[in-house]
Image 1 (cartoon, protein in one colour):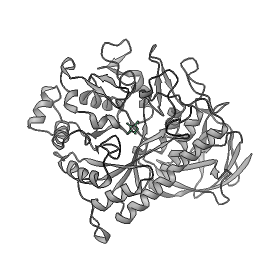
Image 2 (spheres, helix red, strand yellow):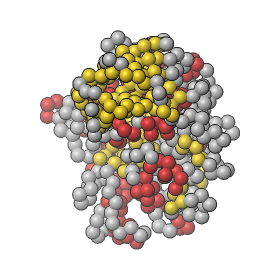
Image 3 (cartoon, helix red, strand yellow):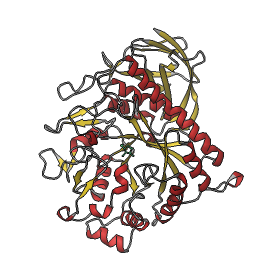
Image 4 (tube, helix red, strand yellow):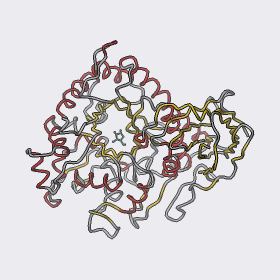
Length: 503
Ligand code: AHR
């Protein structure tokens, strides 16, 4: 067992943790949209206009701030006009990226906006730069957000929607260095300037345009975009056609060809996973530092709009559907990411886990036959941590250092305060060793302290329709008052949240 000394200043507020760091991503990929979010009006599964109500209810408990759609790689081959109007007349297409399956376009713009309304989430739409046109994207923005009278407004009204929607987050393509067009940084920058220009603000709807950014450590990509986005030096002034850059980083513990199994792994694989997850801090730090050189005022946001674990697909499932199980190990990947996000809340304005239902590190898995829904361990981390949304970050210092294993810190923490309440998140990444955290609370007193824990007998444990609560939060009683503050006991491979009222 290790012991960690931590100092938490309750009265020194750091940057605000945007709720958008708890964002989501839903692509037309495998069973994320079809079967996951959307089952169609004729389904036996209770639905509203085809949208699964059990999925909506479960996700509402997470306070999902935004949902990115329709991709991913799919975004750059999606033509939005195919997804409006009467469903029986919508053209079909082949989803060439994901399984070569037919896409009937039954889930389109109106269905997505209805889903966002049901979830209480803001839409984040990824426009098509790879195979689309500037006019197509410009028309989509007009269709969604313009009021009054115009060709696209008349089309929207003819399709049953009188009022414009509010849309803030707008992606200018996706992974332009890869599936989004195989461009180089210079080529894409020119495209982003052009597409960003014609993605107009209509009325008082202000778009927050997000340029397709770097793949993990491609710092040249970030630098090329930053150089082009403003005037250099003291006179730096970001141009109005791009407000943020994205970054994609997946936790892949194996190789691209053999990523490892979601549920069959050993302790060595576990630590390789934690090390891969922890790397997100280096990437965010280095991309942010580069952005600081060009934008010291931090007006351009960094958006990690794809993150999460990526394993081999579950045996017997379509390799193009990216369906994977989700264990206690995935939960720790998520909790570790959130600690990093909280520390970088000044530049990091949004993050979106890939993906919400049935794909990669999902919150929810649905059974294709019975339709049964299962909440994953990752879901529970999002739920236990939701109190950090829009809270002021609080710095946690560990003067004596953190316990390590092969250079990897095995305890991770972050904290925030909001509305007179403090939330502390603590993860013990160690596979088989407990830890005690001695929290020295300064600048305030915490009353009515409660705690919850997410852990399991084995790291490999996961939830199934037969055992839906194998990994689920429970009250945590091993939190004791000390003269300096609190002692929090962290069993091996556990995630704990401690909450209290500022007295
Ligand atoms: O999330 C799955 C895929 O991963 C996305 O479509 C793409 O952007 C990334 O490569």
